[in-house]
Image (cartoon, rainbow, N blue to C red; front, side):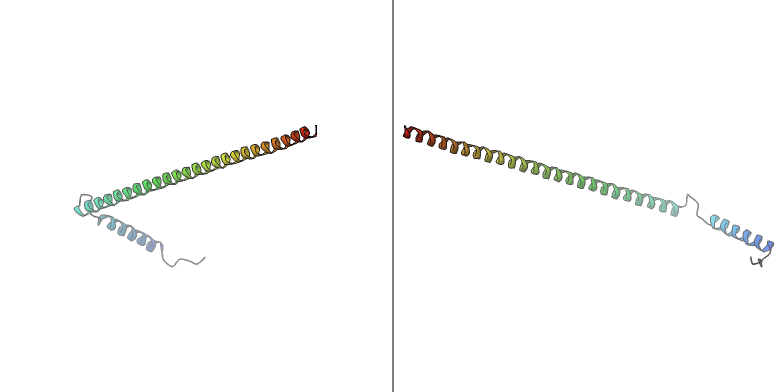
Length: 121
């Protein structure tokens, strides 16, 4: 480890100088009742209020967008359900029509067999 070149007194003076510079910088600040400080604080408050308003508007837009998406999704689901119900109704109607046609064909066959039997007698 290299030996330090500066002495204890030099380090103490450097620390004292640094503390003094920090104190001078603190004392150089304008007081809280200075008009420039008050104006700066008011400007910061105004900017903060504008930011809060923008954030609130953005949040409101996000809520509206989410509601619109939810409504659109609900409408899509309702349309899908309606289409499924219509398809089921069409399928049931087609099944009834096929059943009626099959029963009519069976009746025609039966009537033909009966008519043939009557002919043979």
